[in-house]
Amino acid sequence: MAAAADANSSFSFDGFAKSPSFDKNIALFGDSKLVSDGGSSIQLTGSVSRSQGRVIYMKPIKLFQGTTKGRSFPGSLSTSFSFTMPSKEIGSVLAFVMVPSGLDLRLFGRKDNASSGLVGRPESAKIRNLSSFDGHFNGEKRLNCWIDYEASSKRVEVRLSVSTALKPVDPFVSYSVDLAKLWKGNNFMVGLTSSNGNSSKPHYLHSWSFRMRHPSMRIHSQPLDPNAVSKTVEEEVKTVEVKGKKSKCVWRMLGALVLGAVCGSLGAMLALYLWTICGNRRSMAVVPEECANGKSDIVVIKAAAVVDEQGKK
Image (cartoon, rainbow, N blue to C red):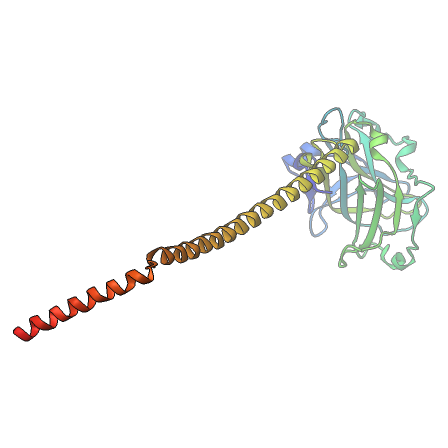
């Protein structure tokens, strides 16, 4: 299925710095703050245990595109971010969140917000063994995470790699979820929430991007009707049959014309031949035997007269 990126619901931060755009679109809550560590990053948690921090992109995002004939179509989304997490202690988490656009964001600043540090997963989720990443949760190497949701398959896939590697083909977490059913046409905001649990080492966010893709309205401008499709196919088949019959009739007409022309030519030639024979027969006079001698005498007389005239000369 074809899809187009929604520029109004997409953003990309290849680093974070204090700017009007940052202040307008990004909100920091809890212990999160801007820091400079050879660049510009967001420190999500403090240097104490049980620290919590959140980053929210405050511009509302539409999951559904405009309706067509009473139908609306959900979009697919993709987000990726680069981070460092120096600890894998119990309670040390970093999660991508989607919250209603009408939610009071001041709730994220409360320390007693019990849900802020909890991350759940569906029972149907398939999770691969992450033992190969054990040595990377030390704060020395950056990790990249990709989260993709496809509206057509209603499936979420999460991928993880070190910063120097490409996006993996196989996800380490995948599960089915219908976001269209959960949100029911409401707008939402996206964010990242983090907690360091029993560790006193902070978590850092170095880059973050988000992209919303809606299906092309040209494709969905007219929903498919099975009955209409079958009728269209039948009409096309009938049209092809009619065209086939017409082509056969044309060839038959051409064949008849050629045969008529050949027969006409043969008839004309036969008529000319008969006319010639009849004409020759008319020019031959039938002379009776008694008249034949008289004519020969006349010819002889004329011939003798001519000889006499030539002798006198």
